[in-house]
Each structure stands twice: as structure tokens, then as C-alpha cells.
Image 1: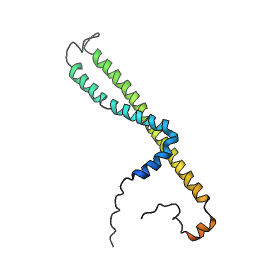
Image 2: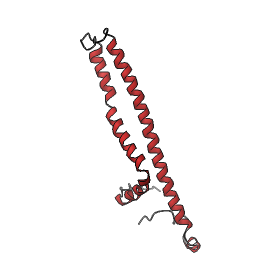
Image 3: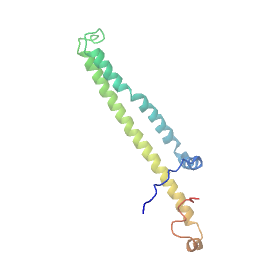
Image 4: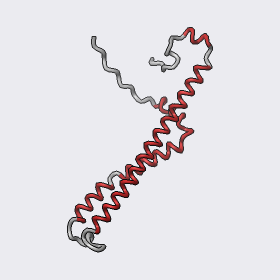
Length: 141
């Protein structure tokens, strides 16, 4: 007795629009999370670029490497800058994770409250005629 694999469900635009209506009261969180994702995407390639610059320019005796007091000063400066960038990027990733999780939890809470209110306001006779679980599951027809 083999079971067939579950079919992939396609993205329903109408269902997505309905979920976005629940996200509308939290538009500031939504826009902030979009902003953070764009900023973090822009910051992602900066660290490898700084490592490339420090290896290419910091390890040889070029004029760029000696612009302060000696050959090691450039490496120290770029390392301090990389540490600062890493701290900023970590804080941004934490904020992004926290904001998106909070947004998701708020939308799920509103969906649950709406579903609960709908079920509570049904006639009691509806529960006698309807099998358990049918009231809360979507129609799969």
C-alpha cells in the first residue's frame, strides 16, 4: 500500500491578497522589514570586498598600505572597519529577524481571532449538522 506524494499547491494570488489585508494594520513593520532586507542585501558583499582589499593592498608595500604611519596601519584600520561592519550587520540581522517574526505572529494572531469570532457567532444548530473540523478547514474543491 503506497501513498502518492502530496501535490504541490500553487500560490493563490487571491489568498495572498487576503493575508495582506491582515498585514495592513502593521504596515510600518512590513515596510521596515523590507527596508532592512534591502540594506542587509547591500551590506552582504562589502565584507568579502574588504577582505580582498586587505589581502591585495595590505600585504604589499604599496603607497596605499603606507598612508598613515607604516605598512601595518592599513591592515589595522581595515580590520577595525570590518569588525564595526560585522557588528552593524549583526544588529541589522537581529532587527530583521525580530521584526519579521513579530509581524508574522501579529498576522497569525489576527487570523486566529477572526476565525474564532466567526465560529463563536455561528448558530448552535450549525455544530450539530457539521462534522468536527469542517468549520475551520478551507474547502479543497
